[in-house]
Image (cartoon, rainbow, N blue to C red; front, top):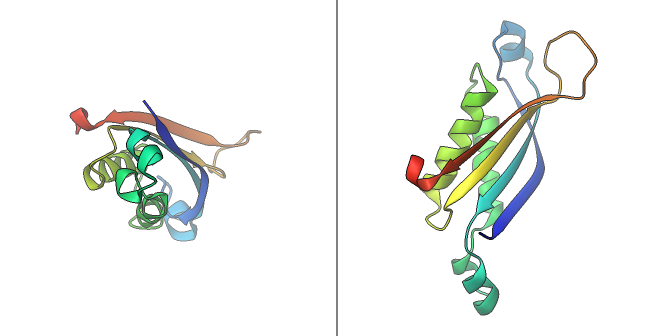
Length: 122
């Protein structure tokens, strides 16, 4: 299956279990991989045969910068469900939500969840 990939989208959100996460917020990064047939778009050069990644970005932004959730798992699930139900051409998607500064002790770059959802599973 062909893919449209949006890498390292950056947002500021208020997701987390701790009250200070909900109050102060923190940066989140999101990777989006959309499984969609791009052959028709490639042959016709017609945007109607693809998925507009600017619109994808705006939907992801609305979710990540919107209502706070306790878990980044819920953020990822919301993104996947929204994309699959909004765009008919998307057959499946892989969503990675990265919390770059979680309030945990230790040395690390980030923590993340990655989910894969198919249109048939929603």
